[in-house]
Image (tube, rainbow, N blue to C red; front, top):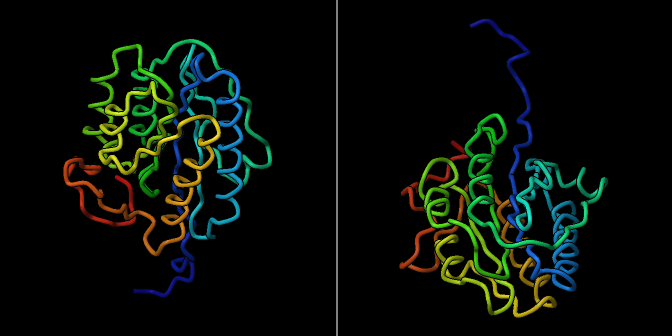
Length: 231
């Protein structure tokens, strides 16, 4: 085979997507929505400080309340830090099913979420009970297609939240972080941020730690490989 210097290319950085599903219903108004915004901003700053050259962290934000919106499409944390994050507005109910459907469609679409990336990390934040048909969308999200391979976390705010639903989402009760009130939201986000940062700076950012609980499974598709390509 003839020597061709163009065949020798340095490896390019790969992306690790982080998707936030944020409850912005009316009950989040006031201190909780402000604390949520500050926690997301701090998360982005931490990712910028800790990410390595080989891994680029992209963040996307889906908000659900009066409307379900793609608040922020995939954006590198460096760019997001520079341009800032638009404020969240708390109003309406809790259409979780629609939000999960939007997130799944975004993850399953290879034009939007390509294959040659690391497994996305998804965090669901809520302070209440879903008010739409959410069971089927949740089942499809955690069991079908590419979304089933995501790393999943949840943050429960207050005592009115459906913790059983959040445990079903994560597949592991230890990955549901409890915030008793607004003041505890930042601490929960720090736990989530630390976990993703650890992945991003590890030798294999595609590898996801196995669930701490045998009762719940965060890998329902039975996918135990830790290769470096998200399928």
